[in-house]
Each structure stands twice: as C-alpha cells, then as structure tokens.
Image (tube, rainbow, N blue to C red; front, side, top):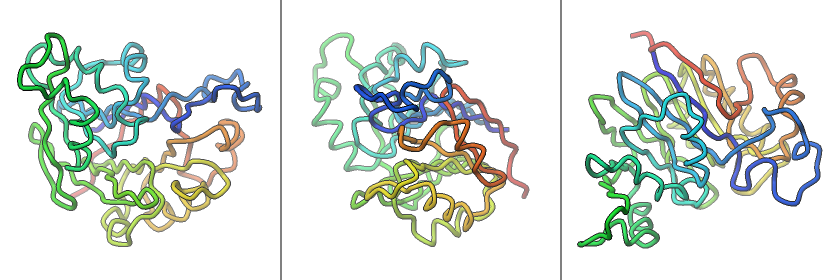
Length: 258
C-alpha cells in the first residue's frame, strides 16, 4: 500500500492570490485554499518529500505525519525549492538526502552556498545531494524510483514513478514514450493549471487528453491556479475517475498487479 498526502496543491502564487478579489480567492470553501505544490509519499516504510515549497514549514506543522527520509526535486523553480532552508529540522542526525537533476543541484549550490560550505556556519541545513540521470531508475531505502522526463515549456524537468504512483507537476508536454511507460498506472497525479491554455503548463483540457492516453486507475489533478475555478464546481464537471486534489488530502493506493 502506498499513501500520498498532498501538502500543497496550488501554483506559484498560491490560492488565494495576493490582491485578488475573484470568487475563488474570496471563497470560504477550504478546498479553495491552496499552498504551493508539494506532497509526501509514504511507501514501504519510507517517507519521501516531493518538492519543498516556500510553504514547507507551515505544511509540515499541519501534516498528519512529519517524518521525512529524503527529498525528490522536480525542478529548480522557487515554488518547488523555496523551503529547503527549513529542512534544518531534519539534519540533527546527519546530512539530509536530496535527489535532483544535476542542473538543479548546481543551482542549489548557487542559491544556498552556506549549506555547502567547507566549514558551514552552525545550525545551517546539512544536505547530501545525489544527481538523478534521466530514464535511469535509482533506489532509496530499497524503494525503486523511476524518473520521468517531461518538459515545462523549454525547461526539462522530472516527474517520478514510485510503485503504483506516477507524480508529474508543471508539465507542458510529455513524450509518447513516457505516456506508454505509464499506461494503466493505478494512480496518476498530474498538473492542470487552469481551463485556459498557458504556454508553460498544461490546461485542463490538455491534461485530460494525457489522462485519456495513459488510462490510469485514478487521476488526481494538482498545481491549480485561481483561474481553474471553484473546487466544487470543477470537480462536478470532471470525467469519472478524475478529481482535483486539495491541501491535506490523503490517498492510498494498492500495489500494481504483477
């Protein structure tokens, strides 16, 4: 059994968006309150953080379980790495493991040089970074993880296949080989920014087209902006087996057969 807890399901601005008075940002429905995108996957005794948003501290203070063993980073954009400094709470017993593309690791060294100094200042996060190679599976604590290369406009980024789960965020285009690789995956978590087309993120209709090709057992949408619409209304219009995630949502999924 795999469990995923959605810590945040919003895009880079979060929802409500600052200085916005649209019906979504003014909604009293807690499902319309979205922190920046992140999740924890709990599988075979391992607790994996997928991205570390600027809201990480707030997210972990309200999570059902705040144990973490490692961080997987999809890409370097601030809304996916802005909370890494707060990993210091997980560094008391040694360096905290982070897995990411080499370009992301290089960028983290530039953004957080104090974390990688030869003689670091006391109390700073101690991070052990390991590069991920596209299309090459790797293991953490005996759990195999398959990186899924996708494109965020012109930026190559990663999704992850972990047991019965495929997790993809910020994707605009996905190669047919990856679609084939994920065919009939039990649980697909995938981004859908809004209903109107966007140059760097899939719109709702584009995401539904990808879901139709993959044909997962269940699909859950993440990384929504306020332009997606009200949670309750959009959920009603989605096809069977597809739904919007919301912050704090916990989903369990059985192992794949065979």
